[in-house]
Image 1 (cartoon, helix red, strand yellow):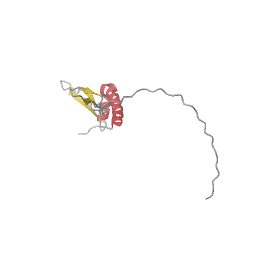
Image 2 (cartoon, one colour; image 1 turned 60 degrees about the horizontal axis):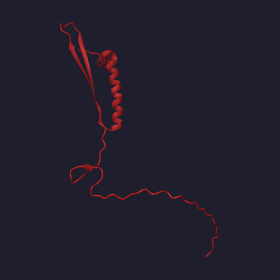
Image 3 (spheres, rainbow, N blue to C red; image 1 turned 45 degrees about the vertical axis):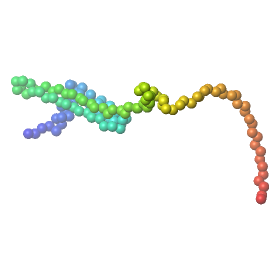
Image 4 (cartoon, rainbow, N blue to C red; image 1 turned 180 degrees about the vertical axis):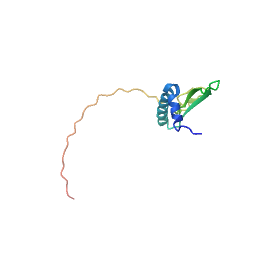
Length: 123
């Protein structure tokens, strides 16, 4: 049975008066950007459901669904230390703290260095 080679593309173009094609184009663009940014794969699925009208009059109801599976960005990790009591904290309980204190900036005096030239002596 012969069929139109452009049947699929033309059907997608007509779904919901072109809104599905626009949604798919936007989804492809966003998915490409997400894949480039994460370095991971994504997926775009178009589902088309075709239901014949009751009565055999040659009419069909088409419904579509666009499913986008975006790649997930890696989440950063937080390093924490466990205490003997079972709590978590950001500092290592086995390492002491340095007694740091603020010091005032002394006013520096400017020193001038004069350049002296010397002649080389032969040995």
